[in-house]
Image 1 (cartoon, rainbow, N blue to C red):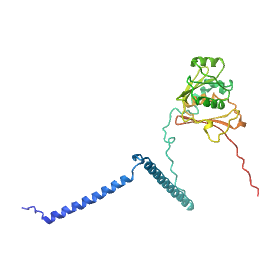
Image 2 (cartoon, one colour):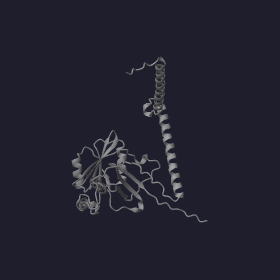
Image 3 (tube, one colour):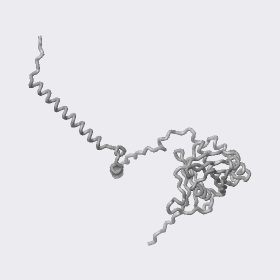
Image 4 (cartoon, helix red, strand yellow):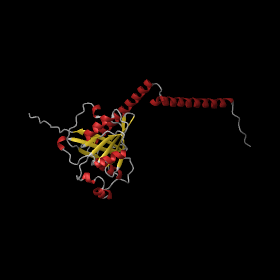
Length: 295
């Protein structure tokens, strides 16, 4: 019969020493992990404003330096490949909101029935030049301090626009008056906390009506070294109004402007639709003449 041998005191002491060494190594690893975690403190975790801004600036600079290194390495690889007569490695396409967006089923196609109905919709008479657009602009009952300045901008942007004070009249009475006076559209400027915050555009005589919220409004006088608009009829640029709703909104905006732009004025009004926001810009362009050096 085999019997188990008892461990001597020396053997038990050696085992204990091994356990102590392992515990020390684990503690060192834990300390290193804690130090790394402390190094990776986010700026949002720092309560002191000055320290937070300093850490944020440092992290931003590090990212900038790393980005430059990657660009230099990529350019060097492309140069080396071209020298060897090989094709350079393909560049990575950055992920953006536009190229990662899911396909929208409401996007209009060239053979869509919606285009066939353009000849009979509410805006066809203006867009076919059978009627000249005539716009009535008014405000909500409680006007703001920046409201008059914004309305004067609208009067300069939209040709054949006329401003009428709202007074105490209801919107229904204003619509009836505009119909009698042969206006094609009605624009109501809404204000909130002394700031214009919305536009209501009503197509006359039978609609439709569209409501737009205003955000980040910058008037011409607030732009440094701004130019002054001329009285020429502007060129209208509409981009990315591709969905069924966007097509209708685009035609509503088109009906506010005459369809015979005067190209001599070099004046452009742009409406750019992106991510369900409409970006507006009013500018003039200049043709640069390159002087040829004769030696």
